[in-house]
Amino acid sequence: MQINFTNIFPSYELIDCGNGKKLERFGNIVLIRPEITASNKPHLTYKDWKDMANAEFIETSKNSGYWNIFKDFEKPWYIEYKDEQIYIKACLNLTQSKHIGIFPEQVLNWNFIKSISKNYQNIKFLNLFGYTGLTSVAAAPFSKTITHIDSIKKVVDWTKLNAKNSGFDNIRAICEDAPKFVEREIKRKNKYNAVILDPPPIGVGANNEKWILNKMLDKLLKNISILLEEKSFVIMNSYSHSLSENAINTMIEENFPNHKTTLNEKIFGLSKYGNTIDHGIFIHLES
Image (cartoon, rainbow, N blue to C red; front, side, top):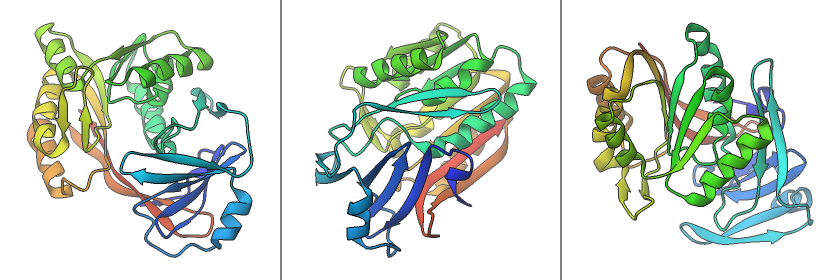
């Protein structure tokens, strides 16, 4: 499925992409960042890109690099997403990786939460690998408490800032290893109406626990199924190329036999000029 996200998230725009890079607008700030899936030819020239951009991230290794600033701007900066029920004020900043605090394609999940929440009252959410908490903020109007888990203290603090700036105090942001937290919740006999997860291909937990998606996802999904109330839903994203779509589908079918799949599709972001980048697989399950 190809989506121009600006149509549903005006503060964001994929302007152009290609040759392993993408040109994006976040509010009034334009950035050039690496994008492995941008294998096509860009519509504009690199000079055009530099003339438009405030900064470009230069990778020096797989997970680090530096920013070339072309036009200075205030950091951090803020963008908003709002509709009749959801309000998010997102704090964005340049980091030592290419990431800036937001995955704008997650707006698809925000809209799904809004839609399905009509069937629930005071949903109990668990958001695993929750990053800077924007999906937790999107869920906040529909819940008394959202439990937000990430293993990096800096992004947990970032989550708390995003929640405060957006006007919510019902997000419990915890710095902990996601699989370990789920195991503890099973022992505590806690249950959830909704689980959101966005697992990385590899990662390190709060106490140096190792996370390897293709070896550990199946067990995590099994444990998540134990935490779910009979009436519940699951939101999952997978950006990894280390697991095939068939392998993920098999895990979903085996671990959530009582849930129907309402979305299981690879999503492509469509630029202003018609070229695309791959946003991975979006999965929505409902019981």
